[in-house]
Image 1: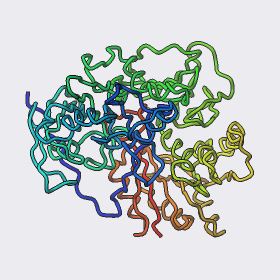
Image 2 (image 1 turned 30 degrees about the vertical axis):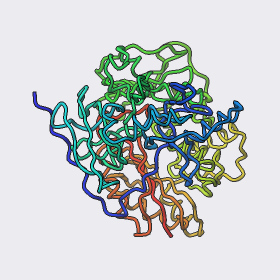
Image 3 (image 1 turned 180 degrees about the vertical axis):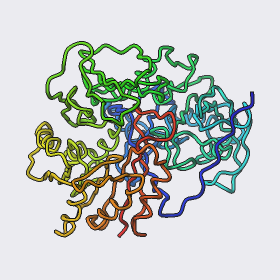
Image 4 (image 1 turned 45 degrees about the vertical axis):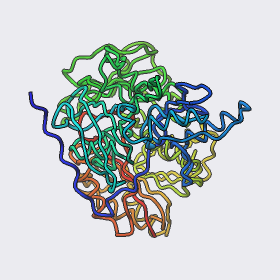
Amino acid sequence: MPPPPAPRPAPRLPPRLTPRLTDAPPLTLYGDAPPTLYRDAHLWVVDKPAGWLTHPDGEGRRPDVVSALEAARARAGEGGAPLGVHQRLDVGTSGALAFSLSPLGARLLADATEREGAREGKRVYLAVVEGAPPSREGVVDGPVPAQPHLSARTRYEVLRRGEGWSLLRVTPLTGRTHQIRAHLARLGCPVRGDGRYGDPFDLRAPRPLLHAHELHVGERIHRAPPPPELTPYLSAALGAPADPLARCEALRAGLFASGHNECYRLINAEGDGVAGWRVDRYGDWLWVIHDEGAPLGPLPAARGVYLLEALVDRSRGAQLAPALWRGEGAPERVTLCEAGVRYSVSLGEQLSTGLFLDQRPQRAWLASAAVSEGRPLGRVLNTFAHAGGFSVAAAVGGAETVSVDLSGRWLARVPEQLALNGLSSRDHRALTGDVFDWLRRLAKRGERFDLLILDPPSTSVGTRKRRWSAQRDYPELVALALPLLAPGGRLLTATNHRQLPPRRFAELVSGALPEHVRLERVCAPGVDFPPAGPLAVKNLIWRDLR
C-alpha cells in the first residue's frame, strides 16, 4: 500500500505574520536538575527535558542543563574542571545529553558526537512527523539553512504510521544546527509541533516531538526513555501501554507527577483515540462530556462523576446541565491548584465549571511572567473574563487587572479566587456589562494596558441584541481594543470557533492591526489536549513594537 502523500511545506509568511518563535516552558518540573542516566569519573549523561537550554544563552531566565549540573556539583562539595560540552540539543528537544568530566571522557564524546565520519549510528532520535515520507527508509542529503555551506546527511526509518503522522527512527550522519528538523521538513514531513520548519499556526503538539533516544559512547549505549508527549505515537515495543486509559494517563504524567496540577483533561476524545467522549479531572471529581450515541468506556477511580450528555441537535436549546452520575457530590466550590495558582470551580450547576482547561498553558504563562521575563506584566485587561481565570493568573504574576464580562454572577468569583491566593482586590477591578460598550468607554477615559486579552465566545448576542460571530466580526473587536494597547504592549487573541482555521484566524486578526503590531508567538496546545485534526482553540500573542 503506497504511503499517503506528504504535506506541502507551509508557504513563506510576510514579516508581520512571522512569529518571533518563543520556546515553550518546561513541560515537567524536574527540581534542581534533570534526571541522571549515567555518571562515572569521566562522563555525566542526563535526560534533558524539553524547554531546557543545553547551556545559558545570556538572553533570558530559561533553565539550562549546564548551570543545573554545576550547581548540583557545588552543593555536593565537588571540585574539578567545568563540564565539557560536546553536543547540544535544541531547547525544544528532549533526551540523552552527555558532558565530559575528564580528558578521557572528552575523547569518548568527541568520537561519538564531533568527529566527522565516526558518528554514524552513534546518535539515534525518535521523531513524530506530519504525514509520511516518500519511502519506508532513506537518506536526506543536502545543506540546511542554519549552515548552508556545509554538507549534511540524515538517515531515517519509518517505525509506525498513524492518521496524518509517522513515527521515525532518525540517525544524523553529520552534525549541523537544526539538521534533523530541516531535513525532515525538506521531505515534506516537518516534525510535529515545530513552528520554525512546519506550519507555525497549526502546532499539533506542545513542543517539537523530537527526542534523543540513544547515545552510543564507547561500548555503552545510553537510552533516554521516550517522554510522555510521545506516548500516543509509540508501539508496545517502545513502552506504550496497551490500555487506552493507561495511555491517556501516561501522556499526562508530567502534569500530575509534581502535584502542581489538580485539574486537567484526562481523555480528549479522538485526540486520544477515544471517540465521542471527553473526561476532565477536577481534583477528586470527574466531569464527563459524552456525545449522544457514542459508547462510553471505563473511567478511572474518582470520588464522584458528573455526566453531561451532549446532544447532536442543540438548535432547540434542550441541552441539559451535567448531573451527578456516580459517587459523592462535590461541594458548591471546589478549590484546586493549577500551575501553582489556586482556583475555584463549580460542578453540576451549569455547562461551565468556571475554568476552561484548554487555556491552562496561557494561564501558566501569565502567572510566571514576572519570573521568566524579569518584570510583571503591568496592567492587564481581560475581556469576556467569565470567572476571571486569566485575571487571577495575571494577578499572581504581579499584574494589575481589569476584568469585563456580561455576567456579574461569574465576575463575582474573581475576588474569591484572588483571596484564595492571598491577594487583595484593591488593584483588580471587575466591570459588568457588554464588552464592546466597555471598550469604547475605557478608550474615552484614556486608559492603557500592557496586555489586552480577547477571548470571546464563537458566537454571542450582547445587550444590543445583535448576533456576533468570531468568524465574521473578530476584526471589529480588535479595532475596538487597539486604542487601549500601550506602546510596547501585547495583545492575546483567542478563539475556539471550529470553522475558523488557524492560518485564516491569524490573517483575520492581522488585517485589523497596524504595521507596528507584529505576531510574537503562536501558542501550542497543552499536553492534555492532543488534537485529532486542526487546532480547535487558537491563541496568538501580538506585540506593539513602538
